[in-house]
Length: 147
Image (spheres, rainbow, N blue to C red):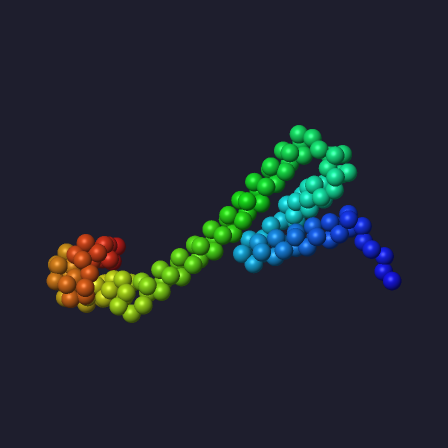
C-alpha cells in the first residue's frame, strides 16, 4: 500500500503542472520565456502555496517581487499574442491583395504598361491606363513612383 502524500507535496506537484502548462502555452504562442522568469515564478508560487513559507517570507519585498513578476509575465503573454495577431493579419492581407486581380496585380499591370515605352510621361500612362486596369488615377501615379 502506498503512503498518502502530504498537502505540501500535492501543492508542489500541482504547482509544477501549472508552470509546465503556462510554459507550454507561451512556447506554443511563439514566445520563449527565459528560465530565470519561470524560476522566479515557481519560487513565488511555492511561497504562496504554503502558509508556513508565506508567513516566513511575507514582507514588502515579496509583494514587489510578485508585482514585478506578474508585470513581466503579462508583457511576455501580450508580446506573444501580438506576434500571432500580426502574423494572422499579414497572412490575411497577402490573401486579399496578392490574389489574381488584387491590388498588387493591378499595380504590376500599370508598371508593365509604363515599361512598354508607349507613353512619354508617367502621368499620361496613369491617365490612359487607370480605367482599363480598374484602379484610381492616384493609385496609378503612386504605383509608377520610382519606376
